[in-house]
Length: 264
Image 1 (cartoon, rainbow, N blue to C red):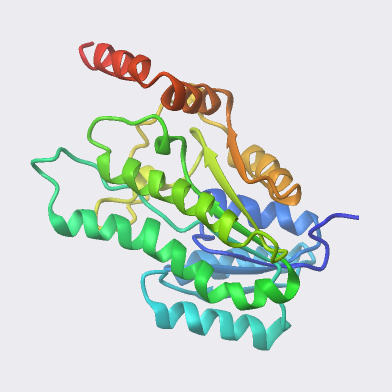
Image 2 (cartoon, rainbow, N blue to C red):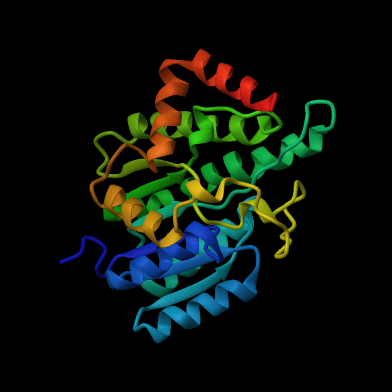
């Protein structure tokens, strides 16, 4: 039997990309799925799709930067199913630009969503997770280890997610609640179509290397495997593992490669 069968899983940032792919993958495991995100329309569409597949699902529009939204979401989950077994803090976006161009508001916006929103999602979910001895999942990025020019806010936010995951794992040791921090490499998502203000542009081009891109359904499959095993840290895609290894152990090599590539 699947470790997710009959379990209640709450996914933030569930309307597209990895969040959507994980929801569809969890449907195959017969989980009860709670979908959250800022845009109600894609959440409702996905909820209908999951119900058609025979899965219990609930859509709760939620902005992770608003504590009242998070409180209300947890209250609704408790009222509906009286349990929460897994929270996947997946909501996030990328702020990019040069140090001269980025304002304090840009930096604040990046950290409010990717870092503070992530921690507060966990904070409000934790009482129910302690009852179920459940799982916390934080979605980071290989950018936590291998940095890039004009991506300082995003890299810094994901480095913070990595540190938060390690600290949570220590803090929760012995409680029965596990924390898995997942760092993907290039995966199909809408992250490149969201601007620095968090506005989604469906027609914006994705300039990330197409040849290195993993399909979101393949990413979801390996992520769920890591969550089921309660892995503490999980890095995936072969290029992601290579980038993270070099960034952690040979940062000079990453610097050399990045500076040489920028000259082309």
